[in-house]
Image (cartoon, rainbow, N blue to C red; front, side):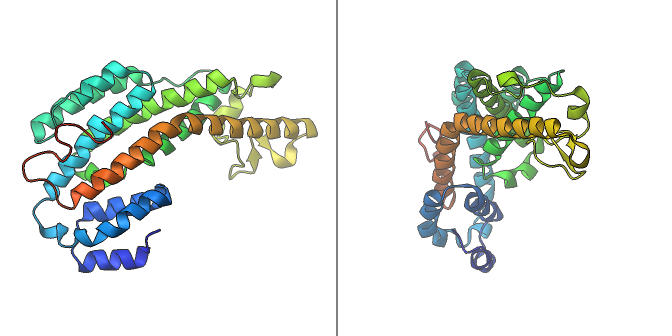
Length: 279
């Protein structure tokens, strides 16, 4: 949607904040075209933001969004409304003290919603498919990776908790639909297949294997079983992503809304007047 070369040449010439340049690039790469188009009329307002003395405010706005908007949306999707309310009830982030409180709560919540890896091979396969869908959803909704360097512990704690909550949503959708890798009477995957580097998506690995089966050494029955696993994996991924899509769409709209406010951060009040985006 954005002309990458022209945009970045212009961004350097016009002294655009690196945070905003990075966010625009991530939005362009992962968000729907209709949301990217909303940025085009606003790009001219970004000139001089690298030197306007407000980049620390922009970092705080992005961190606040991660903790009081992004994470609560995923927690609500995972039916953890009380935890979501705790985070959304915090005051807008303005300093290191507030950031410390958010990290404390995010660590507590993240530990509670975290999922241990299963012991059975078929469980590993379902687990990895859900994890991939959750990671894709979480990374595709937050364009604020640039703020990680400002406080790595804050960023990683909050995004890890969000990913854990998203994974719960994905796993619940898979299990409810009954589309796990052993549904439909399929034989369980061999434990050594999951541990020997079979791909999470069921695709062909670099060593010439398909779902734990060496192509040149497979019997026709093994190839059919491998193909069946791949087909079930495709259905599993689709169901997981469908369950995550409402939260993804909500957060993408919210992130674009926040981006528009970052060009000219408010001097005194949070731009959302006491509420977080998507509130």
